[in-house]
Image (cartoon, rainbow, N blue to C red; front, top):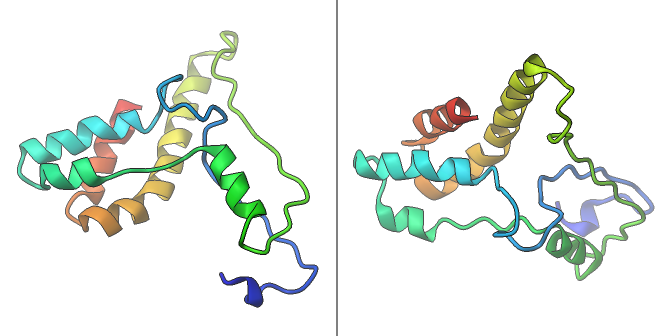
Length: 135
């Protein structure tokens, strides 16, 4: 949406998935779960290795906030981070099963259009199904 299409003094809610830590090698990353299915599809000849090598996602929250505050003429008045409680060991097995499904569905909703634009529709079902099974 272009800034001139936004109602003056209007508000919008942006829901994004990002990491709080700007260093991608500093904490476990759910997107690593996508690497195995993509490499499996390369081995099967469904997609090219060069396409996997050129696939890159930037998910640093600091960069997102600087873009929103920067040249896009949006005034960011507040933001809230929501994090999952993965380290709480008293939540029970069923909680983690449900969380895995929710994470997989969230990842699918976010990644499907991105993967489609980069790889085409050849990998959507198989690649995302494999990622869902890993989760």
